[in-house]
Length: 401
Length: 135
Image 1 (tube, one colour):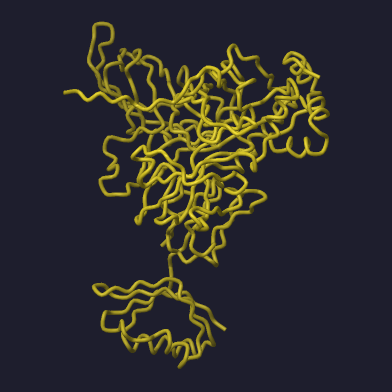
Image 2 (cartoon, each protein chain N blue to C red; image 1 turned 120 degrees about the vertical axis):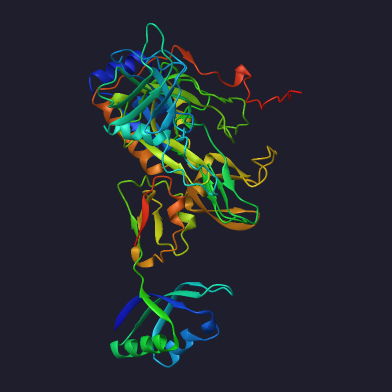
């Protein structure tokens, strides 16, 4: 029996909606079967928490007296450079930005203790941030420099706008070389010393709606502890990645671009992140509600870790050199057990994505919906799926002579 | 029974001396080597957990001092900052002594200080600076 989104929202408003997490639905379907579960359940909440580099914020700080035009000048928040190439007092701060004097990897591996992601965490935690700007004067914006403390509560707009989050599947990173390597997938010990993965698997949003039949532009979500929206497909969105019979992508596939009011968010769900030898980033917590409109959608949400496969990739050679080839395929159930087999060797696993925090987000979102505080939205447009033919293309490099 | 965690530093001339053997055989002490680093150019360094009767322990440590081994208590300590930890588990495979373990049901980390040998492998691995070494 199919339901409409309006019917589900009516039930939410009355506090009568049946909401379960993407983990709980698995047992429920086992117990009651697809048909009965689809009748009973209105919403399944999915979630993820992990480092997501394509993240950042934009702020409008209001006008100083006399006025200053940051656009075309240079500005720093807590020594971290921000992008000023927009209007006078708007700027964008990216998660991976580093202070000019950070030594980077000059002495390898660099520590990358503080950068854009940490500034975002500090702002959200209510801390003051130091804004230093220099620019050129104009008749309407005469001031050339500015040094001031700013605080999230005082700025006009503060918006988290992440061009690519919540990757639908990801590589399992290993190191076949004889030396330690430092990557965005963590420290990888030589000769298959460890294997790192990064997905919440069965809880992860896009694994629960693999063909994007409910998620699209305008989907209301949990973002960083506040309310946000899916605003577009994320960059590198790759719906045509190979899939299992049940439609689950076997390698990185769909992504979402998300946006939300930073002032509502919390530093529990937005965390500055330092990857030794690699750089800084921001770990983001996202929760996506999936309306159970019919049995097909319910079936997708019942996906289990055993059925979700990821590719094992060598980050010492294959990944950096863009050589294709997987060292094998493993399930998230295997990855979460703590060890996998690669080339006949038992390799211990570690995750960059926190399953514990994803579980907490799915449960929080469930509570919001149950209490009638969070209504679901009908997407204005669904994300491009398999039939779009969209693929993730490599750079076509044309050397300039 | 007394138990101590010690850092032993010995000069190049003592590299050939079987000190662990002597401590066990001559002084009846239980010696557990936590870390060892001995190279030709450098002095040797051994981090041990040593236990035995007080008298035997005193005698054993006297023997070490007499032959020229410098003894310091293991004053370093790894501290797990639980409020910064996201329980991501990326540090887990790097811990050589299983001092950091995962409850696979909860997918949450716990830290057993007694198993920690202060090797420091978890420090650069933690993206959230949730572990630190104290001196």
